Image (tube, rainbow, N blue to C red):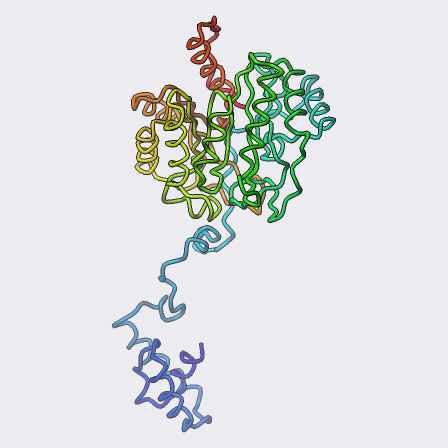
Length: 408
């Protein structure tokens, strides 16, 4: 602003000097400007302005003269925060609003007898669920029974405070979470036995403050569940344990039936979506190592769409997962939990999700669950996987076809 005002008040011999000048030239302009006669008439200044505009037309537009730097590329953060709207002949810049929530993502308010019973049991046994902590939109359907009339809840082990801070997740963050509850494995097994489930999912916060990342706590919980209710199929959705493959092995050989670990997003977006301690290749190494230590283990992962990924990046991600011999993959819509979290880039249509389901099955995955409300713990997916496991054990399987409309 100083350089621009100065150029308008210098002698005529300096009128044609460009607006953008280097630091050295600016000092020179200031030196000569100090000799300007402040009694210059307003008419003379108008003449200088006209001359200046005429000179600028040869090298820059009027918009560039008025707003130098207007056409400079915005940063990613600026692009997310600003938008330009045209009303008649006026241009107005406003804060970028989130896309309106489409009809296919609207869910009912949770209620019902089953919902109340599970919530009461969880509080009484001092247990946490990812359903509540991650604000899952399907909590009412899953806890209430849904179309299969089987209540499902994903138990979150090791407390409700995570040592990591991913931009998409609403679980509380704490560098030094509370110590583990030594009674949690027993309480978890008791609750699962009480609910009479056939299939249960265990997940956890990340505990980078612990030497083994909580892998032994996972293993103990699985052991107690199998002891109290040996018929129950157990899926574990774990973190990456800081990249420790020994910890991955501890959980993989603990008696569980399905090992899940989420890559969350495509490789290019991983540094912007996940905590800096998480990595795309590190997550792939977890899934690969599970197969290395137990080849017949069913492995599973999940991808969020709507974060800004391209179709080519999603396709490449699916190819990488097949190279790692991952059996099952779920794809769902990212939904912003609070205004403090990463914004939704777009709401992906059900048709596009169907496209990825078809692509995934054609690539050789045993099961692909793809839909706007699909989450890591997916009821129809659990139903399908349980049938695979029952067939392996020579047990009768259910003939009910799983629907891809509901999730857990």
